[in-house]
Structures are given as C-alpha cells and as structure tokens.
Length: 209
Image (cartoon, rainbow, N blue to C red; front, top):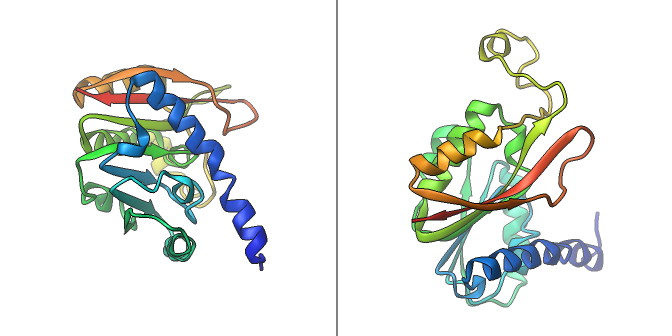
C-alpha cells in the first residue's frame, strides 16, 4: 500500500497532462481555468483531475471501474477546490450516451485504444456531441499500427475477443468524418507519446462550431 507521500507524488505526475492541455488552450485562444464544465473520460484514480485549475466550475469524472472512481473521490477530497465534482460509472456502452452534455472541455488519455474501431468511433461521436458551442475535446488515440487489420466478422466469432487487454487503432480519415458529422473542426493534432512499440498515436484536438 502506498504511503500518503508516495500517493501524492503519483498524483502530481498529472501536472504534465494539465500543462499539455494548457498549451492546447493557448493555441486556440481559450482559458482552461475559466471552463464552465470539464469531463475526463477514463479518469482512473484522478491523476489528471487532481491537477486541474480549482476555478473550473464543474468537473465530471468518468471511468469504467467502481474502485477507480472511489479512489478518485478519496484523492479529490483532500484537494482544496471551488469545483463541484460529479462521478459517472460506465458499465455498458449505453451509459456513455447518458452522460450530461454542455462541456467546455473533454479530455481522454490512453483509454480509447482498448476498444474495437467501431466502438472507438461510436464513443468519439458521443463525446463530441457532449461539447458546448466552441467547446474543445483533446482525445489521445492510436491512428496507425504495423500490419494492423480489423474484420468485424472475424472478431465477433473469435473465442478470445474481449478477454484480453486489446490494442486497436482508428485511422485519421475516420476522425475527419466524425468531426464533420458532429459539427466540429479537427483543429490540429500532435504526437505526444502514450503508446509504444509499433503503434503511432496522437492527441487529436476537436473544437465545436
């Protein structure tokens, strides 16, 4: 079990992620600290959220693990903040569609790649629909992998499908189509690490019209 000092040291590593988000905001001429509503998709134990500006009015923590959300709650209780926190457990895909909308900022890091391409695409479509006008989404996503292919029919008949920690990609062309359908612009993208080996990933930055 981690000591309080080790836990705090781990949580503070989220400063790097928030610094990156601030750089994105600077590029777009928006201010992270003045966001009305922020959503972290795949918050884990709250490492990134812990380091967000305390002036953000509402912060929505979304995860797929009840244990992670409980730990996030415990970690955020010790943080002095004027923000109001909301916690959302995703147990099934339909739960994503029930998330509240109107967010100024949505962020996700090393989460989406564990889903199949159709689910990645459907998830991004929902997340973009949750943005407020002029809202920004920064989504980390693998977009290329050596010798990668995905056949829905083959996958659906595989006995090992969904039983291991899978790594998938979504080509960048799909993301432009998603942005168009969601009335967003794919403003820019950049490589920021997160996946190793033969996987190439980027942060994809969307902005709502």
